[in-house]
Length: 234
Image 1 (cartoon, rainbow, N blue to C red):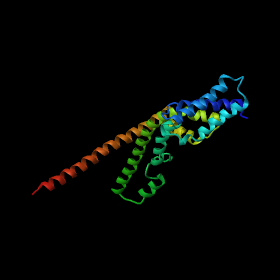
Image 2: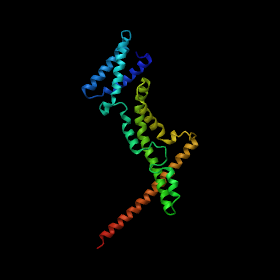
Image 3: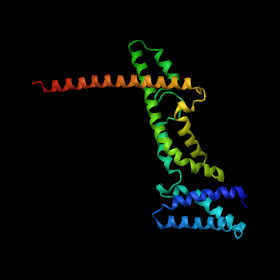
Image 4: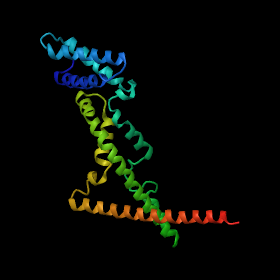
């Protein structure tokens, strides 16, 4: 038999599932939503007639539906808002704690210590560009992820209260809302001054990145124009 508190939490999760399935454009989804909704109504609206068996069967139906949520059509799946973000995070591997996208910091010093100028200059530039690229990627994913995570948060809260599996999704949402944007998540930079300093550093790096990108583009354009002129000569 389920405890009263746990049963109530599962019923709240069931209401979210019913609301989601109510958007279904197929008869099976609508039937499942109607069946679960009827069970919930019978338990909540007629408590004096709701037996322990009825409550347990209602909870069982909701938990079974939750367990099979990933078999639902994509637009009906709970937490479907964060699926594209989760796949992007996995593909880009930005969850690493390093400040660089392609280079490990430990390899940076090892590489730079073995070369002379001007190679060192260009390699340092490559590391700087790597950092800037990571900042841009994090900002883009933070912007996309915050909205998605906010929409998915009620599902995670309801699932945790109901005592069902939601830990991976909770961790993903926390990562999107807190860790993905280091200025908000970094535990060592809590003061306003430290956060501003971090932002200024990122702004300077990105401005340098933009300036360099423009210079390289101009250089490549010049090469292209030279090649075209050479091809036109008799």
